[in-house]
Image (cartoon, rainbow over the protein chains, first blue to last red):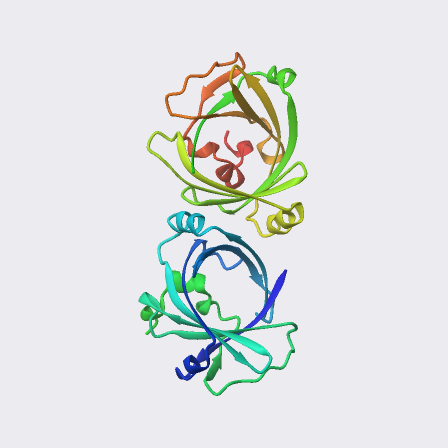
Length: 156
Length: 156
């Protein structure tokens, strides 16, 4: 399937009070090439393998394939991943009809907080909460695969 | 799990008369790094995703994780793979207590025929059929991931 997503920076931590769910995520990449990333993720008690393709021209839509795997399989596969395991806390916030997934990064990417909203079409309208900042959709530097290679703390 | 395998070149096509099964395989790689290959395979009517780690020192044993996926998923994922899709016919031959999987490559790797036998331990004894040639276990050039990058026809 193709996934349509828009991605934004976050300007304040006010979203935390509105979150209905909070989950710890650890993830690594078997491949960080932007045209074929292979991600291994531990999310709460579940494991996932996710493959993403190239973005379309607008940067809004990207092929994505995901399968749930066991936590143990995910842990074994995480050991094979390239250096630069990403750890983050994911907050889920309902704003109007849309769920915002907000990732607060730790470790080498501490200081970065980023929100994603999934849409059904590229033109779909959604409510922008006050804590939503600059849009970074399609900016490859903000792909998690690239954050694992060139973490936020090295950006300045 | 770790997989223990020995790999050999083949000296004649005599094995074809002994084969109890023959299957067409097409496969590509999302990652050809020898320490973390991610392979997408179409085998007969099935699809598979397989992740292999680094070999141990002897080159005999290698971490391997595999999941069956649908043929359609495999076809979609094959489109994301790096250049160098491998096509081959796999013959399965029973010799004594062991199954030999023999791959006759097509396309860019035409002329290469290679057998693999899976073992339960590194020292396990098995019968060597007359058509079995030079051992190439652990030789990275003969990894399918490397054959997709540097095919057999370019070797001479």
